[in-house]
Amino acid sequence: MAGVRWPPEDSDLNPPRPAAATAAAEQMISDDDRSVAADSWSIKSEYGSTLDDEQRHADAVDMLSGCNFPAASDYSSDKEGPDSNEVEASLLGLQSYWDASYAEDLANFHEHGQAGEIWFGIEVMDTVATWTKTLCANISQSHKSEGSSNSGPDPASISKDLSSWGVLDIGTGNGLLLQELAKQGFSDLTGTDYSEGAIVLAQKIATRNGFPNINFMVDDVLETKLNRKFHLVMDKGTLDAIGLHPDGQMKRLMYWESVSNLVASGGILVITSCNNTKDELLQEVENFNHKMLDIQDLDQDQEGSDENVVFQYLDHVRTYPTILFGGIEGSRVCTVAFQRL
Image 1 (cartoon, helix red, strand yellow):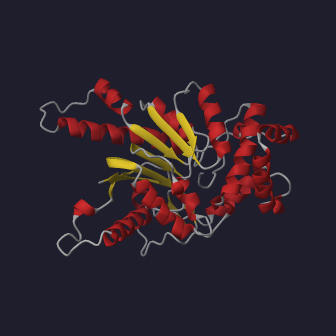
Image 2 (spheres, one colour):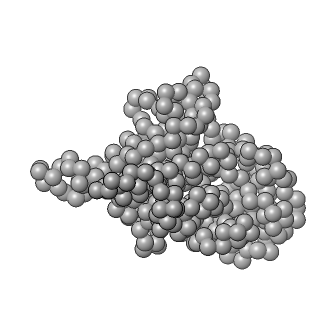
Image 3 (cartoon, rainbow, N blue to C red):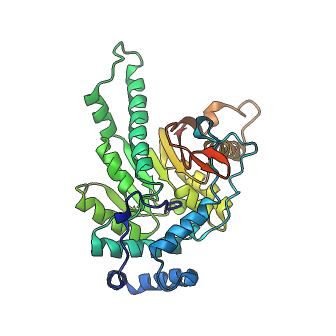
């Protein structure tokens, strides 16, 4: 699962798909998978029997009109009354869309060896990976420096610390973000996606690129079967896609409840989004915290206590370039980190 697919940075990421690619895809899926794919294509019947790159990019352009672009200051929106429900439902919120899309990407990988598109572009992915490493390294160092006179960073110690961080990428897609995190020093890496085609693709790409130890599995974050907590949970576009489902408002609440059980105490959740600004994500987390406080039926003395807050804002990326959209200059994406208390 992923959010809006921005046009690839390089034109060779998605060469025209020949008819042979469709045949290859048919050979790689079971009868049950074919029925799912058939349902997927029937939903997109207005595009014809295949969904070519031109149409997929046109879909992305259409989706951009629904994105909330931040104001220029601090690359995040300060608009009044943030509302996460402004984005209308879309095909990109349906699993059938992603099943069909990754079936096509998988066929293209076998035909041309291409990894597929990179959500939000290569620069954003690289920024997320390097920024996250710095954030995690600073947290590790701050813990070590407490009560210690040695405040200088130790590269060897940082590398050892990062290798012990359990990392989960939800809605991993083709898994390229995990590969970038591996290059930054993380080694306990897991990627999940509710589309089996995405997981097969991610495994094949990781093995080809020399990252066979990254663990990939089919799992729906809204109904996760994982029984492990992670120090770092990454989301690049998944919350966006969930919000595009016809039942997006309800599923977003399910998302926060599920993710709160996946992030270990003191761990970090990093969300990269184009359909939500930093302020909107902060408001959504605040609403979730309040809801959890209500559910706990706290007494008068406990209400409002920081000890009962689930997530708190930690930091956000400030370096994304800005674009002009609808007369407003802002960043097309935001990346925000929350800490699980």
